[in-house]
Length: 158
Image (cartoon, rainbow, N blue to C red; front, top):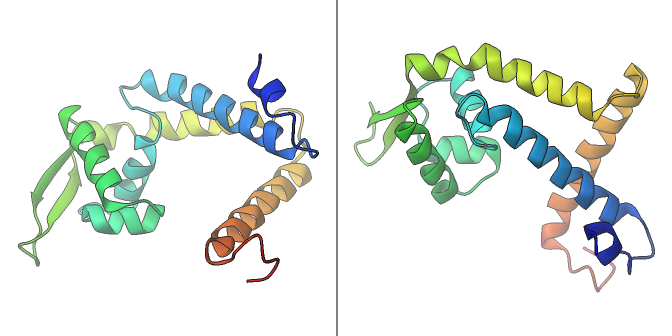
């Protein structure tokens, strides 16, 4: 039984369709990034560091909306791959500073190209207006779901 067949009890096709698209995107991204020795998800940590090198794991986590332990595990893997190094933080001895290696900096163009190709592949057949509208809808959905963390969905109010 396929994932979409298993999820069919929902009256609306949104949940199975979104779940299927999310999984297809994760698989395609994993394949694209593995060509460069990067596991899917690690590119976002690298993106933070390309914008501002030397961040602490906590700051990376805050910027990405992740937990610090998740970022700590990810930076450990990136360090083992030779893409980043951890150094004592310059102003707080309790923290570490995550810095790109030359190898990590050199992946910027290749991974940006992979992300652009992945977006083009995912949105094939969408015109520019539809791409922008879809992105706005996803942003609105994200905001709705983040806002809903404090709401009880059973009560119908926040």
